[in-house]
Length: 118
Image (cartoon, rainbow, N blue to C red; front, side, top):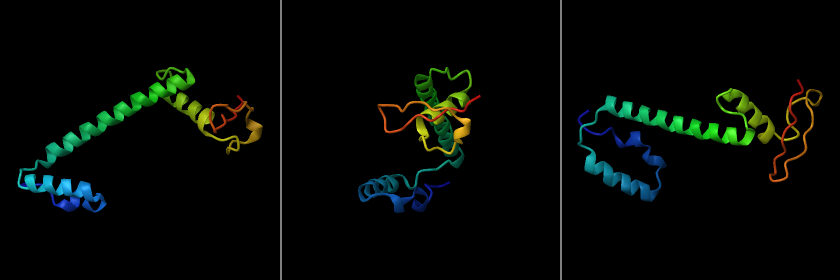
């Protein structure tokens, strides 16, 4: 492309006044620079994957610390345990006949759920 894409592609309607002033200054200084769509998409996708990988690494560390289950055993098992134990209320949708009760967790406003009985 001979220059940057139009301003409408940068979601200017959602920007706050200060951010819009800064964006307009940046845009005007670079609007005639060549714009390589393929290179920009590739850079965006690579950054997206790096962010996702960092997020997953942090999530696995938090899940392992909370449950004591190493993430390499089965990430979905740790996720399921964390969800059941830490985030569902006692009035959860799990049928009472399928679960056993656990005492409430004192340090938070959430109660651990009742785990499914094998």
